[in-house]
Image (cartoon, rainbow, N blue to C red; front, top):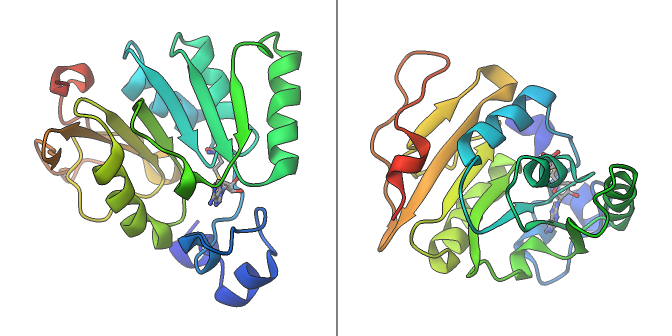
Length: 204
Ligand SMILES: C[S@@+](CC[C@H](N)C(=O)[O-])C[C@H]1O[C@@H](n2cnc3c(N)ncnc32)[C@H](O)[C@@H]1O
């Protein structure tokens, strides 16, 4: 899916036509993000870049909760989702309940722009390219040193990834936060699926 199909036009955003109503004070009021679930491969790639990492894991714009549930199942705990659309929050909770994880994973109906990320060590995003410049600012301002951000389908616009996994629509980029901001070690090469660094070796 291209950027144009993913980013909601202003008129639709103002009508609250896609993906849950934006908060009027949110930057997303201008550039809203529709719901598109991550593919199974995309979820696998997200987990491959986060597996084994300690600390709180969050999915910003958690949709039906698939990434949060998968993260919890692979041992990333606590795993928390923040999602604006109440129907998707309800669906995520139902799926967690069906999976026997109702008391373990948490889904909050919250505007991701208002959530503090200061205690988050692993952050997953799958959002429209139009909001990613704003998101970079928020991540850089709030995340602690050692945190990792993984972005599905669309890379963060100015950060350098430490790892890239997958191809095409399933591709996921990883970024590590160091004191003073994100510091990637390399840029993606021509290969369609490459790992640029050992994910856990970049922490600290
Ligand atoms: C492309 S979907 C990704 C869903 C899920 N992360 C996944 O990978 O399957 C983006 C999600 O972000 C949600 N969203 C958009 N703006 C948001 C905001 N300001 N706060 C919280 N969630 C938001 C949308 O409702 C949608 O469910």
